[in-house]
Amino acid sequence: METKNDIISDILQLFNEKGHSEYGGEAVTQLEHALQTATLARENNASDQLITAALLHDIGHLLHDLPNDAPLKGIDDVHENKAAVFLRKYFPETVTEPVRLHVMAKRYLSSTEETYYSLLSEPSKQSLVLQGGLMSSTEVSSFEQNPYFSDAVKLRKWDDQAKVQELTTAPVEDFEKNIAVSLRSYFLEDSL
Ligand code: FE
Image (cartoon, rainbow, N blue to C red; front, side, top):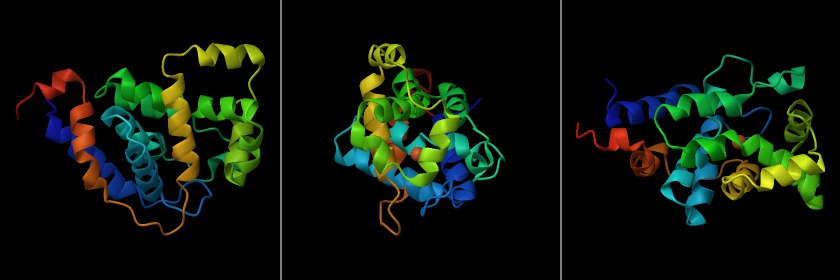
């Protein structure tokens, strides 16, 4: 049976083994992107759960073997769903829902904030088309009703800013504590 420590070390290992791959056409690696996103969450006094979501929001990219430039080839890797399915085993909705909704939040912000779309990076604009493009007004209002709407939008904004080349951040081990306290209560009771 998996213990709290097993889960944390599996996650850190995934980053250490696969995090050095390029982040879909951006200037940073997957690991740098994850750390920058989590650092922004921490600087904005987010909860442990939202910091964990920020760190793990793109873990879906580390769980498949599609090429990093899949969107450029017209393939949507649906990484947000892969991540949510994987994370649900270990974390509550306060972690998994902002992760699952971070692509939806990009569609939302592109549809509702004029400058947002223009500031998206080129690879991010390209993947938006594959991810469903702009939202209809019905989609906009139903997304606003989602209990995790505001966390998903916050996460998305940090995500978009977390593409700075050669920015020094804390190492992934520094976020172990945020991950540990965010696990499902079942794992927290585990004293091993
Ligand atoms: Fe991201």
